[in-house]
Figure 1 (cartoon, rainbow, N blue to C red):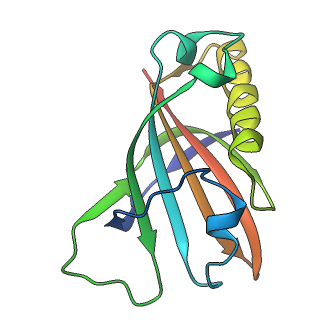
Figure 2: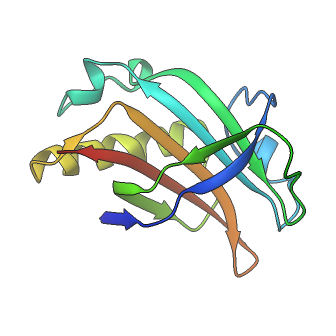
Length: 141
């Protein structure tokens, strides 16, 4: 799906390390907490219609956390306003699961002749008290 995000989603930068970027670290978060991970995609795999899963995500650029009472003086990171390829599933997904979803998102985006950029944002949150995993991939002009 194509999504026009009108306002940035701002998070407090955290040094939390997510070894698996998945259920174990995130499922223990209280219901009011959101997490945002940002990856720089491999330049070749990020433009391939058949990317190699193990080489698609590059470096984890940052991790952000938002709570109902976030510190307004802390350093922040954001999911910028813009046009995105967007996918979500109503569950916490392990790294391998959301990578599969990112590959499908990329294939669909390339098939639709969008120009996906080289960043992937993975957002974990709760909606109506239930866990959700969302993927955002900026679309260039």
